[in-house]
Image (cartoon, rainbow, N blue to C red; front, side):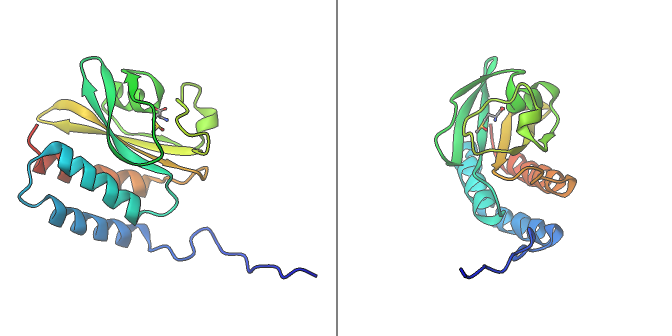
Length: 167
Ligand code: SME
């Protein structure tokens, strides 16, 4: 009979979210210190999030250009380049200027499929001096991957990013 691997719980080898985000915010502070370039900071922000948080298949920025969002620095597979304001999860977060947490993208009718592997998504707006600059998007292959703790942790990280960056 074939050997059966020991089942692992979904949270195995994961730090508790509070510790994870405390570490992420500390590392981010170091990466952003003294660096005002928004694109460079978005690149390191995306790379840090992608390397730190488990169970992601994409993490990156869309930058507001006129009436649409245009792909910026990211980690993961190539993605859709342009998203109209109000369209998809990213456009909804941009139009509302509020985070959008989608537990199951199959249940979000206007979800834009960049990678069919994605099953849940969290998008946080990037705001500087009261103006929308873009959004930060994270995708996971697992349904219900993102929680209120993730939303709070990424919103706080986004505030660090926008505080350090000159637009
Ligand atoms: N799913 C997003 C599009 C961007 S990708 O996931 C990278 C959306 O619905 O806006």
